[in-house]
Image 1 (cartoon, rainbow, N blue to C red):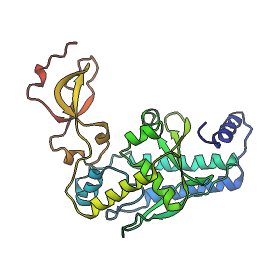
Image 2 (cartoon, helix red, strand yellow):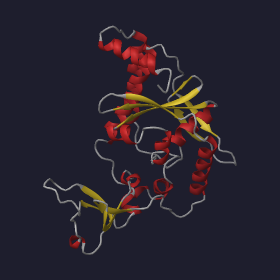
Image 3 (spheres, one colour):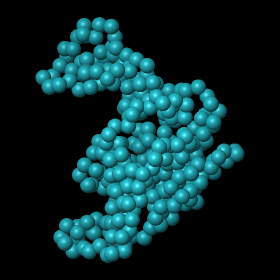
Length: 294
């Protein structure tokens, strides 16, 4: 167990499966109010305003933020299910907080912070999810892939963090004048949940990264790619083609950042099923001349 609250929540969930629990009216009303607020935010929010650094985006890659500020028209359109995913995230947060309340786990609910990075920089605004035991925690809903491969521990998340979760959490904690806690993560595919502690994070290093991001964007520097593409391999043998790295696959500006980007059926796949789509950044001239034998 990474957090003391895991035990009462686990007991509550076990009792609920046995029909031994009852949600009181006050908690039920809070759930209804929070769900209503979440739906209102996502469905009645109106058009997005001008780009601004916020705690929710300051930890993202510089190249993505540069495009959001300077080339917003180049963003790929959001897919139809984008808002559904956002609403599900809000609902997961609401439900998890209701479980904490039912389990008699004390916490302070959402709060707005303004993080002062010093040096005359404009404060960065954000809203944390909760404070428990004087530490700020964040609640994340995750796909099965992210739950299993990305949201594993602090070290793994720091190495694969294109969404800026680490900086976001550190900023919330420092802005609130509290210690860094961690993430409550819920797997949307199967309902599993866990706690990932971030209490050993290097707070000053994360703050320095945020200062560097702020200065880079404020100084109107040229766009810099944060990641490199990778060689395509087939049974550990290079094909001569190059593909996007995982961190770039989720970016809405990949087509602008990589002018030769093309999503095509795999050039190396030789199975009987439909070839998977691959994000290519460079294709060698005679791809089909490649020797695919092992």
